[in-house]
Image 1 (cartoon, rainbow, N blue to C red):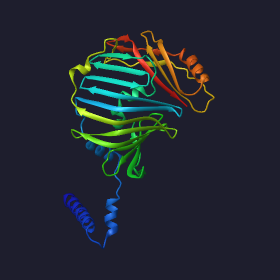
Image 2: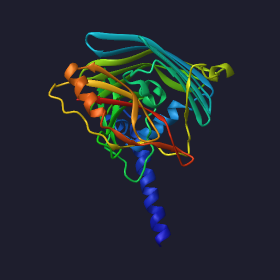
Image 3: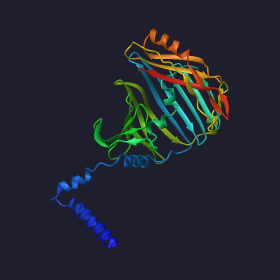
Image 4: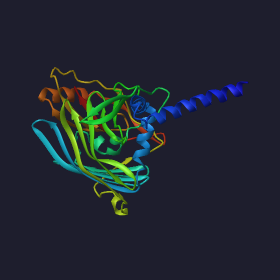
Length: 328
């Protein structure tokens, strides 16, 4: 009898669904059809639709884009970005004003030629693919909120929040029909995506704008990805410094990290340095994008007290680069 009851229940549901679907084609039942059309998907379903629609990265590939940094209203820095990537090799070149770097990674080694300065948002610019491809990996401690309908710059969107057990949950809005990324917001920085393009079935934005406190901070435009990369792209520069880039090692982590107390309402600074094998920070460069001399002085006093546990490779401590973004 249990089998018969299950069959009867299934049959009733199937018939009910068929009637509801048929109603969509009948002018006498518009409310039933709109009820189906207005059904809001779950965040998990939207994540899968986003990943399916985006496609696979066309390795190897080249990326190029123009760049504008606006760290404050009185400063605008123009430049460009160029990537070449394969499965285990990459080359990144960034030029922005007086700043210039070339960074080649091959296996466990990384070669860096740079002006040894602090460039705001450098680490973000070196990994733009992660900006338009958030890590949606679900773990035991991550969670998604319910999905809401919104309009982003006049475009219909589905929006939800991904809680990464981090001080800043990530708010995400996807194009309601095409499921591409329209906007992310982490409580500090709002990132918007425009002018999508397709190469080898892979979809990516042609323009990215990062907004802080209502003002554009970073704009990446004319972004283009092309299939293929030449072997010469991965030749290390002659004046480069060599760093271990061990996939099986451990990352550096702070032991003592006092932060400055600022009275100024809004400030933004970038700290660059090298973490030595004894945990000390050398070659320190501080770039205050928004603030005054008091901000710079307070930062130098705080950074002088920083101590780190160094990164390791094969169980041995190694020298690593550090770039820290600090703001209020």
